[in-house]
Amino acid sequence: MTSLGCCGTPARVPDPGESPDALLRLVLPLLAWVAAHCQRAGLSERVASIVPALGYPVVYAVVVAVLIVVRRGAADRRLAAMLAGLAGGFAIWIALHPASGAEFALARGDHLLAAGCGGAAIRRLPAAVRLRVLVVVSVGVLVLLAGPVAVAIVFAGMAGGVVAHRLDPTASPSRTLLVQASLMGATELGCYLAWGRYGTLGIAAQGLFAFMLLRHVSWVVDVRRGAQGSFLDYCCFQLFYPCCYGATERFADFRARNADPGAFVDERGLFRAAFRGAVYSGIWLVFPASIDLASLLTAPGRLAFAATYLLVFVRSAIFLMAVWSTLEAIALCWGMRIHPNFAGILAARSPSQFWYAWRGTMTRWLVEYVYIPLGGNRAHQVRNVFAVFAVSAAWHAMGVPFLQPTRPLAALAPIGAWALVNAVVLSVALAWRGRGWTLWPPMTPALVRTNAARLGTWVFGGVTATFLAFQSGDLLDRFPDFLTRLAGLH
Image (cartoon, rainbow, N blue to C red; front, side):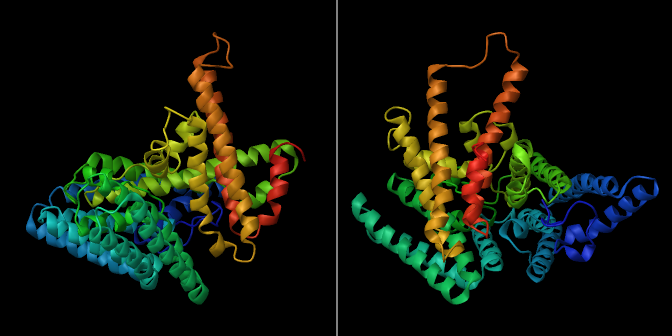
């Protein structure tokens, strides 16, 4: 996924100077040349613009293939030194040409090239050195994304939590909860004070804190369960930058999958993830940027509203799959394995499958630390499902004072409605599946069943793609009208 631009329509190929991505700046002149020749051949401007957008994955695949071939020779010290120099050069470029938004800032072609060169360069180093390099690189990326003050505020709170636990490792669960909650609450307060004084810096700190908080809870629980790891292991787990925004890895699982940090090699998996991200990126670019929440609210008639509702979901899903496929590839470049996030969303055929696809790492976190401890499928399943979405709603609500400072209570309505709809639908779906019920006659073709289930899941997934978008921006007053239209009452 690259930063071709989320606001422009695919009616033209952007000028090279519009993108901070070094790889894209090299490729865009070629794509513009292809688009111009397509128009000269008689194709319309819109059709001509789609050709290079779909051709970009091919160019991207060639670049990644060359990178993989070069990485295979990294055992040679001179080549490893050259790759380290290239990684440093890309890092300098990225630092001098930042992109806005965590997704666009991370899911760039030059980020992938920097990680590919850097990961190959450190592969033969001792494990302790690789671990330190990963931590230092991740801190650098986080500072570029959020700023040094935000990183200092958030990580100081996390480090305080680690120190508190190390000083009293045998504390009772209630005392551990009280101490850790106090430290995390103080960190959230620090983010809020930074927001009051510096504005966007505080918002960046809160966004970083939200995901680090869940990972910190995982560390506390897993260490109490017997998981081992040094403070550097904790730092790598918390700071590894492909996970820093949007991923909720679990500590024990992350340690088990990356027992030798920076040494894992899966070049085929790297190519598949990078190419998949480029393909999704090309498809996303074909979508008109006008398919958004504002256009959904102004869609004329029920049919247009329903079609736009589904298209908003599909466009959101494609964008997220593009970003996270690229981030998965970046992690593999560094010799690390992370769980897929936002993977296979459009193929899901049930509410459960949807949630294991859409932000799947957070779903696994909620199942591991909320659903199963409450009894899971064994007892009080409906209560446990509602508890999961109550925790998720509380987590989403953490950002409301930053996003809607003048109307925080009103901004909680979309979050609460989202949690309620998901809890009810998922509870019904689990009960339905447990009893083996079906709406279809026995002779219904499998193709019909599959596609109907997929379409129904898209409708269900659209709740997440739309409801949560109302908590920020200036469309909050339109949420009641949106609900009436969605229910078919308007």
